[in-house]
Image 1 (cartoon, rainbow, N blue to C red):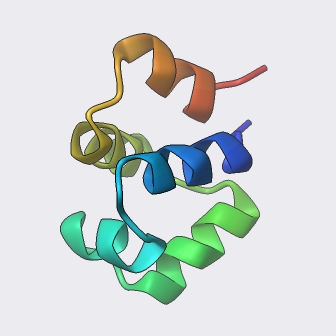
Image 2 (image 1 turned 135 degrees about the horizontal axis):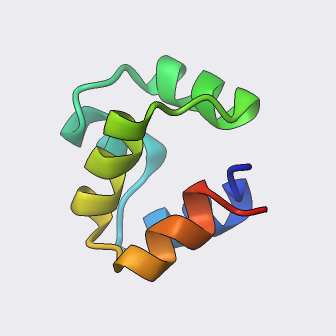
Length: 67
């Protein structure tokens, strides 16, 4: 399950907004918000977000694949 608050925190920590991060990964902000709300990021999208935010492997696992 996606840890939405952690992801939002990392976005803010890195100086981005949802609009800027979604643009950097080629997604409409409305789609990004919908995927946040429904926890429906694909593996490829999670990888793109992780690369853009420069998340470590452990951080990405903790955010996108929390138990």
